[in-house]
Length: 173
Image 1 (cartoon, rainbow, N blue to C red):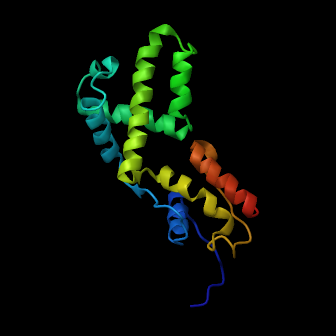
Image 2: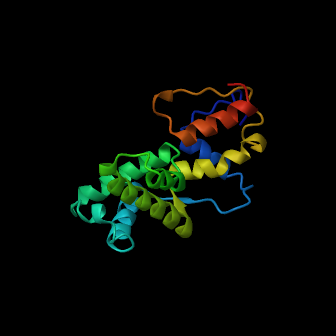
Image 3: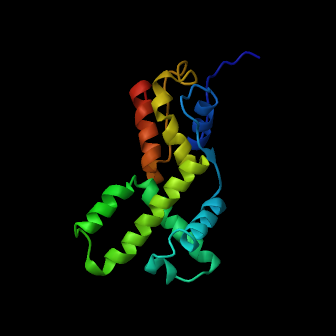
C-alpha cells in the first residue's frame, strides 16, 4: 500500500539490523550472540587460557561468577576501553599497587574475550553497531528520512553514542 508517513520506531539494535540488511559491508559482520554465550566464554578462558592469572583463580567457581565477570568486561567494552593502553598504564604505575594484579588479570581476560570474539566471528549488539558506523553516510535506509529523533539518552554506551553522532552528521536530528 501507499505509505503516507515514513515513520520508524527502532531501538539501536533494530537500527543496526536495518543497516546490516543493506548488505554493503566490506568485511564480515559479527554474529550477535547472547549474554550466556559470553559468560561461558569467560568461564572457558579463565579455566584454560588464563589459569596462570592468580586473581582469577581465587574468585570461586559459582555460576554467578561468570556473569559478574562478563558484566565487568561488558562495562569496559561499553566505555571504549582499549586493553593495550590499559595494560601499559598498569605497567607504568598509574594504578595503586594493591590493585595492579587484579586489574592486570581482568584486562587480560577482557583482551582474551575480544580476541576470541573476533576469531569466532561473534559479538554483542554493540559490536554489530560499531561495525556499521562507517556505512551511515551512504545508508539507503536513512536517505529518504527528513529527520531522525532519539529518545532515551540516559544509558547510552560509547558505541551507541558514536552511531548517534554518525547519524547526526548525516541527517537533521
